[in-house]
Length: 115
Image (tube, rainbow, N blue to C red):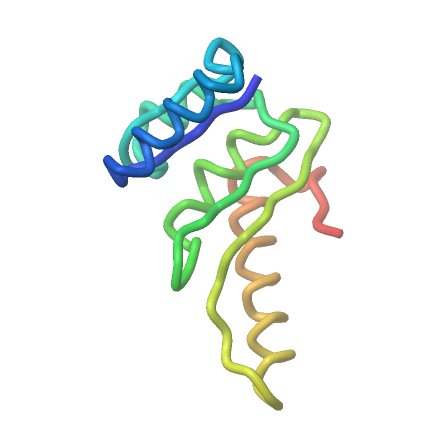
């Protein structure tokens, strides 16, 4: 099962048409609108093995719902985040990882780990 959150009306229409053409529309639950909504949190809670956050320049505001959506067994969290290049890049990446870990522990508890 796939959940798709999208707020762009043109992208939603393209998604629906593409799923129909592929015969996969029954396998995808489309949740139109912002992925940060409470309804998305409820619909996806503990049901996902992989969550992809495409919000840019940062996925910060989507992290709580994304982490909450992960299966109790764990999963992969793909985060988009604009960071500076060059010497500052590694510090920025470490800061993003620390922020993700903080949200993960707050949402799911100390038994969860980031790898």
